[in-house]
Length: 93
Image 1 (cartoon, rainbow, N blue to C red):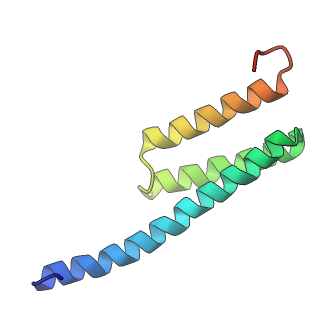
Image 2 (image 1 turned 45 degrees about the horizontal axis):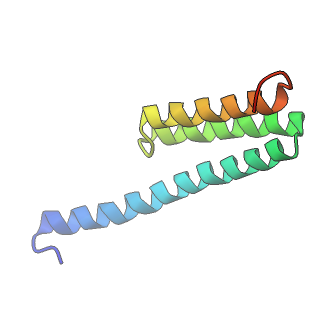
Image 3 (image 1 turned 60 degrees about the horizontal axis):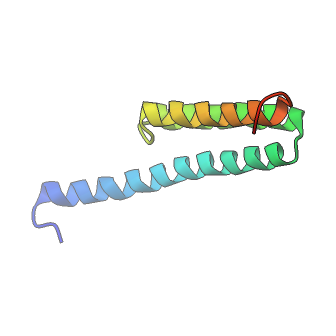
């Protein structure tokens, strides 16, 4: 239990920030799941649409400091690489 005013305020702020960060991370995870489903179904149009949504959600999370910028770049790079492997028949899986 916090003992001074600044610690009490910090605790209140942490609760608000934690809730906000959880919402943003949840949006990223949901966009990722939708993208993975369209990749598994091999639906190119749906995959492209879901990729734009996923990239946007990751960028928003990075902008709001929920994700580190390198973490966001790594997530985007890995999913694009995976999509290219699935939709390019010549590439090894």
